Length: 401
Ligand code: HEM
Image 1 (cartoon, rainbow, N blue to C red):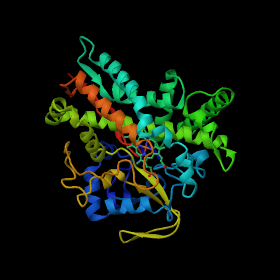
Image 2: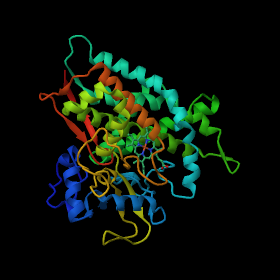
Image 3: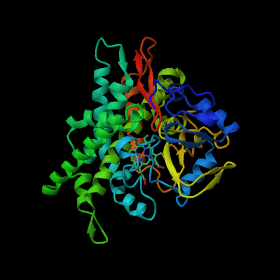
Image 4: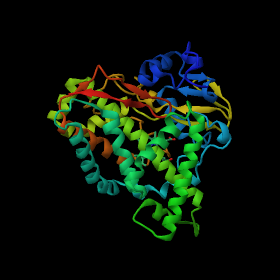
């Protein structure tokens, strides 16, 4: 199914399209309508799936690892070669009890203390990028391409232990696997293969000589007296790449889009930079980028409907975050919101392992952007575009200053 041949959506309750361009640009209206009229929507598009929009349903499903498996977390189906074999990327595709040790293996790299190590480098990188954007004579930039997109892949490359020169390749793979997968399934499969070849190669290098990186660390770990399988390590490496890049650049991009279009909030953050930490939580809530999926292991009743064993359910964290039953003035962005139990990072055992890192990157990216460029707006001459589906956010964000 390609975008050009897909019929437009007539009824979101029975035929939603996760890649609909208007939905990708702003899904909040659709979520609000479904939440009151059809809180568990159904669509046969993209392999068929269910879409809960109420906070309580999304959270309950996320906690219910018995009846909802993470064996296939892809919002879009893997067509072609991989159709019956969704990629294994522990811990995100693991179910309990194995999930517990799959996750434990990577946590040391994402503790608050470990993240402190990356902050200096992140700040330097952001300052370097802003120096280019604010170079004398420049008045236009693409804040998504030239800024948001540049930050997470470089930090992840550092953690994995690969050179910065490979970063552009990582970005292309991530987009091919996550964003454009539905539109170009062939490239999705070849990109995945290239990624696997790259990481198996890296593993061989580290087997010969260890370095101070997560790849070397995983090679030295044992479970029940056995080293990890190569396939396990490579699955985890690909997850780091895919989970750490698109998500964070989408969040930084959405925050900058908000600031480009809300002068009052931007000026307040410039005047009160200490508010950035709180504002970042609100940006995460209101513009949550990530939707995941689960597979029902048995028939389950949700919101008065029956999800059949084997059905796919979308974990619509972005919809849960806009539920007025959970958040006051849910569709407003309140940058000093005091109570904010959002689920942008998921909830339950799979809650984002990289949340400390993501938060640090967002805070530093926004602080450094506003420090260098306190006054800017959306460029009406440029084209604002969005990615949708599994990870939603601006992909072209033209600004003028
Ligand atoms: C703003 C940025 C980010 C957002 C919104 C985000 C969101 C999420 C969400 C919603 C999940 C839950 C998946 C599920 O329930 O199936 C998740 C899991 C995960 N994220 Fe993130 N993420 C972000 C950044 C990162 C970064 C920078 C990393 C670091 C590499 C990362 C690594 C992971 C990992 C390893 C998991 C799997 C945890 C598990 O299954 O136990 N994420 N993320």
